[in-house]
Image (cartoon, rainbow, N blue to C red; front, side, top):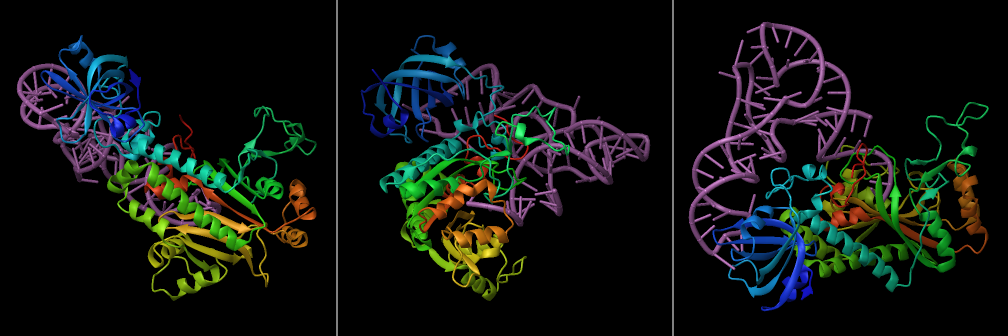
Length: 463
RNA sequence: UCCUCGGUAGCUCAGUGGUAGAGCGAUCGGCUGUUAACCGAUUGGUCGUAGGUUCGAAUCCCACCCGGGGAGCCA
């Protein structure tokens, strides 16, 4: 007897094979002399249909216990299906019920549920078709990311989750402390005395591993991080989480063009990989969630991304008849509506916008000739907006110091970052990719909270 | 945080001043190699919370809580 995953049985199972499956009952259709079950074990979108005949021992009582949500082990023989919708099915010989699920209280019904409702039962929603598909695609996506970088000889580096520098430059930080918050130590000025805190100074959850990734790139040439990131912004949108996963490659001896090339190759690679590994799930998204999913994937894989400079983007936006709520003018940051116009209407594919005005970008981005712009790049995807943000980094110590001064940043915490420019500095570049945004983009899921198992957003940290 | 829409049965929603409705689900029965099974019956409610107006409030007013969409911030 072999204990198999349902996906293997559906793909390769042959008649007369004896198998045992374990999983959760998705639906039961009971007839007079026998019953159909559909069992799912998370390995695939499709369920395995099981035939329970009335001749089974304890048929009546067992059947009563088996409902949507029950957990079972079933062994039996595979037979060709007499029905239309499946190639093969399992004729049960032995049935174990691990746990029943009271149909009067089990929240998942045999019908379509709204994503809002499913969010309120995050501990059960993975048992639905959509979330099963999302989590399998998410997994394939993560695997593809590692595989891509590993094939290219990138070192996966683990950057800290706790950081003491607040000038990483990306939004609000969560404070990390082990103070008794009802009795916070005060100094002579009656302010919080952080010297008594765990790290002897203010500490935060990281908003980016980039600065540390740069450190590692200055020893290993090509590295990447892939880990959780935290932003304490009070953001309530379909594309923001307080806790999300980010991928940040950092490449030594690389300029902005190399950075763009890598990012584009990277996105193409993971789309291709996921299509290959999760064809049924992707088909499901295309049919049930967003009917442009497969077209989009095809578009990504087979077309070159558009590449324009910020200055060109502004010209294009000024030229169009499209009305914008926010006026366009060289120097302003691109608004969501502008990004969407470029990616969705004008190019209908990802657009890489480069060389933004230095005033609207971070201090570490390399200053271009003429000192008006920096070597930044954003990849704008249809529907999602900014999916990747990157830049060539400023490797020249004097200019970096000048930029830090101009922006009035506190250098004390990142003296080590400046040291990299003192000792064997090299041109280098990198980018950050919001992992959930990629999964969103790939699956067509409208809300980012539905592509992570346990979303953290303002006022929401249950489960 | 701002703008906007919403919160009524387990779920999805209708109900705009006069005793609370439907579909689905669930329960019971029937029937059929079924597959979002089908047919019949039954079951179902502190109308988000707390005030107020009114003879009377799901409905009108105020405050608050929560959710969706959009914006900002960003990945």
